[in-house]
Image (cartoon, rainbow, N blue to C red; front, top):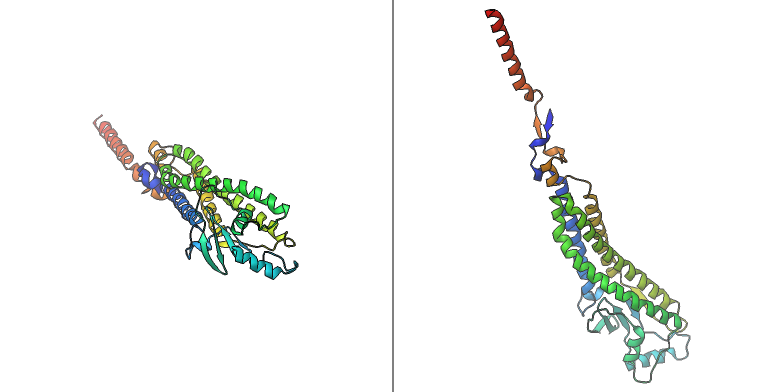
Length: 299
């Protein structure tokens, strides 16, 4: 049994390409969902949002025990308005006592977390806490990195929407794969770059705080949920871009099938029985033989 490549419908013949196109669109949808979770995390005091943060700073024992009267000084700092902990999101920070958040700052664009400013604003006038130079240097890096991180996360979210809607267009022609590959690359790049910057920045910031335990005692805890959501958002975006990149040269499109450039999926070809295409030729040969015998007999 053979197959007739001309008997396929373009839609059926491009089934493989259709599957990959919708798969890439679905991957970008997953990425968008987790990007939204990253961007709304820690914006207000809610049970779910409270667990989505980049880093959590415990200042309940900010004065080390090695300092005389450390317990008394920590108690005074709390009385003056210093909260037990602060946790950082993309738009703002939240603060609280014990394990309960009491308030969150107003969300604002290009936000960056400055613990020195917060501490000084919440203590009474004239009260100061001197932080070591390595923490100050780390804050400069945090400011620059936070601005880039904020811009990249928002850009990635904006690019994800057209990626979801436009990637199915690659089903119809391979020419659409080139601009879609560029679009999806920018989407994956911005999300991944923001994720890498956020991960590196807060890990470095945590290590800087841990190295200053002789001067101040600030315990830092990275937000596992936020980190997981960031990388889950980045991974499908990378896979979606790789699929679009592969479709530039692989898998027949509907236009390829119509123009005969590619045959598409073999499963969609109509089977032809052996010898079925020779029936007309056999009949013609038989007719010629009859005519020859008839002419020879009359001669």
